[in-house]
Image: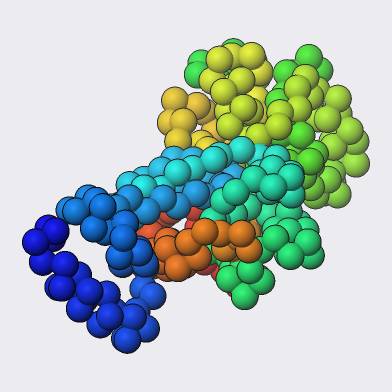
Length: 281
C-alpha cells in the first residue's frame, strides 16, 4: 500500500470498523501509523511465563505457533512456578502464565492477576529418579536412596516438583516394603535444594549428585541420564494449569496460543517431551 492511494486506506479502515473486526489476525492500527510506515510488517509479541519443566516442549510449541502465525514472536520466561508468581505479583508484564501446580495459579486468581475463566489444565506430568551417566554410586533401586552417604538433589519445598518429591517419599514410607523411616533417611541425604527443576537435572548431569527426583519430561530432555521409575501407587500426577493474565496487552493472541496448546498438534508435542494427555481438574 502506498501514499498514492490514500482513499483506499480510508475505505478499508471504514470497512473493518463497520464489521467490528477485532480478530488476532489483524490487530488494530491507526490510519496515521499506516500511512507513515507504508508496507511495514507488524510483529505481534506474546510473553509467556512458564514453569521450567516446560522449557523444551514450549520452545518447540512456540516455534510451531510462530510458523502458523506469520508476524508473531513468542517470548518465554522459564523459571520455578513460585518465582514466576512472585515476578507477576511484583508487576512483571506478561500475557500467559503456565504453572506446574494449582497452588501458585490459584494465588494469582485470588489477587485478580489472572483472567479466571481462561484458567484450565492442559497436560500432566509424573516424576522419576535420575542418576548420572555411569551411575557412580551404583544405585539399583528406590530403596538405595536411603543408603548412607548418597548425595541426593531435590527441588526446594517451595517448588512444585520439590513438594511432589517429598510427597512421594512420604507415600513410600507408609509402605512396609520401605519402612516408616524411609522418608527421613532419604531426606537426610539431600545435599542441595534447587529453585527450579532444571537445576536438579544439571547437577545430576554434572555428577554433583548421585541422584535426583525430577519430572518424567525432564528425563526425556536429558536422555544421557539413567532413570529409576517410581511406581504409580507412590507417584504424583502433577496437573499443569495455564491462564491469560489480567494485564495482557494481547489477550486475543494469548487465547490463540492456548487454543494451539490444547489442539492435537500442541498435545502431540507435549507427548513427545514426556507429558501426559489433558486430565480434568
